Image (cartoon, rainbow, N blue to C red; front, side, top):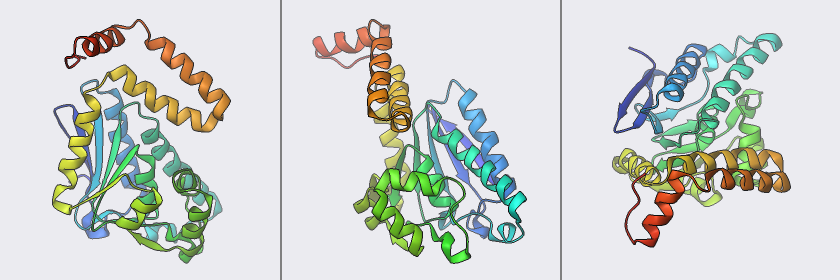
Length: 254
């Protein structure tokens, strides 16, 4: 049975990290499977949105420590670069991706959740970047995405102490969007995506691009990007339907 499983229903793909005996830890083999699944999702026009979750009591409890323990500088570079590549691929998908965090999201698991566009957490979820306790730093983008989500001061505190925090604390600091009961997690993630997908598909993609690229460009260049994306949609069939539906006081049919 694959360690990364993909299912699709009504245009929503669910990616399940399924290595429960190892708390879904991210070995090189798991990362290769994840990259292959993300590529399939990107190419599949029938998939409009994605949920990423884990099996058992973990979302992803981290990278494979046994494998990490054998790394030297050269192999460590390759290991980090590969993880960064896979997570950046997820982040750059022009289809909304929700992390449904069911349990431990530590180290690489927290980094995976942060690479998703939105995060819904179970009350049982735990978050942290405890790499300093192993004598290393996050290698899959954690030092960069965490401060962008929660601010420099809080990110430094979490990174330097290696503290593990609750779902409620993650919500308070802005690391997650919502916290729900465990039994409601997947249903809520699906409902959120359904609400998103009720909107214009080109507009959804444009929002994802504007936020993703604008944060890297700086505000002035980001505003210019926004103007280009706005103008590209003006006069489109999607805009005409959306504005006409509003004026006619009906739901749009995208």
